[in-house]
Length: 480
Ligand SMILES: Nc1ncnc2c1ncn2[C@@H]1O[C@H](COP(=O)(O)OP(=O)(O)OP(=O)(O)O)[C@@H](O)[C@H]1O
Ligand SMILES: O=P(O)(O)OC[C@H]1O[C@](O)(CO)[C@@H](O)[C@@H]1O
Ligand SMILES: [Mg+2]
View 1: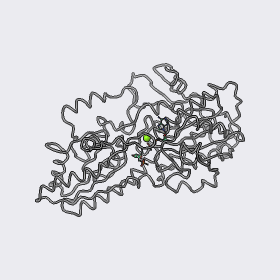
View 2 (view 1 turned 180 degrees about the vertical axis):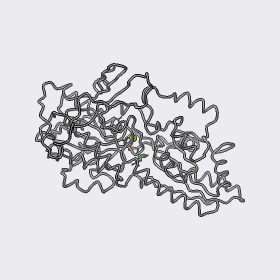
View 3 (view 1 turned 90 degrees about the horizontal axis):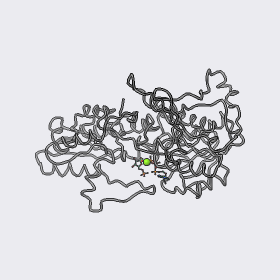
């Protein structure tokens, strides 16, 4: 294992193919740290809970469906409070930062980190870093108390602001060191977690007693290993309103077509789940599944057939779908990037709408009415729903317990319904995508009745690329 990875993950093996991909701990690089009894012991709410503390040997399997004789496989450390903690309440100086795009539930996570620190561990110094990573060195901080955060879970967005770009490792770690921050809670997506891993490594290199912990946030659900990301259900639910509107508009017109564009840069989970939930959608397009427009078996032919059969249709398209087709047509095939280096996408919803209109313009006997609805930001700028609120609470509390127990360099995440601590490199090494050879996509195809648009040669290629995973790597959202 290279040095970089070995300080990010500790691998332990056991009988029958058991593997623990463990997270680092402060004691790995600072010897003889004092420990203290967990103050939750005397917390009236928890003192009667049997086995409240997590056993040091408890781990959670990454894969729950196993063959009778298969190896036990990869496990992660179970999250939760430990008997002993590595900080006294007075000693803690915590900071919370949110980075990347918005996602429902960000404020709930902030609220619950603050409240867990205050009410469970007696910590009173919690800072909000204003406006993402660059806020560490270029902006003011916000003091966060239970009073300040009391109502914030009812609001969308993040009260401490967010941004893309601005990840300047030396400046960020200098700021952590200069301010005496010793617990850093970093909430964000794949880019943010990569940034957190880099900060953790620098903190460790400098030998600081400062924890760096991540909480995964991604509306696209593109972070691997975890069951799903917070805010995803809320976004899928909100997307229903746009799909309903598209359906009502389409149904009410002669040859009505409703096109809805949803988020999903490289991963089409929102589009897939919103389509499955709605049942009104006739065609769902995602980045992972290529399609073509013209000719036999193409998208335009399917639209025509669907209109002839049903009189109307609804199309849901993820923003990253068909980008290669748009790029092939565009003169300035976009190499534009946002401040974090993410490629800026062209508007596939608008493009498809134009293409469909142009196709039917040549068929006067078949006039169409097409409405294009782009609810992109509306599905992520709202507060989280009830179940996401509970999920955010558990994530935040689990993260605080791990941090107080001295674990560092980890992301707090739900694996098979259990809270765990996952090493950064497992979260950042790859992206979670819809696997179009898994059952979930097949369910979608059979629900919409759309063609797969894959030509026989492409089917062979896809099957070759997507050999069934043998190591529990398949996305939970695909593999149900
Ligand atoms: N490889 C990297 N190393 C260090 N920092 C990074 C890296 N990638 C991204 N970052 C930083 O992480 C922050 C967030 O990244 P990004 O804008 O890609 O959003 P994200 O966390 O992936 O969230 P989302 O994609 O869900 O909106 C930015 O401040 C960016 O500079
Ligand atoms: O316009 P912004 O804020 O960069 O965010 C847009 C992007 O953020 C995401 O929601 C998450 O990466 C993508 O789906 C989308 O492309
Ligand atoms: Mg991202």
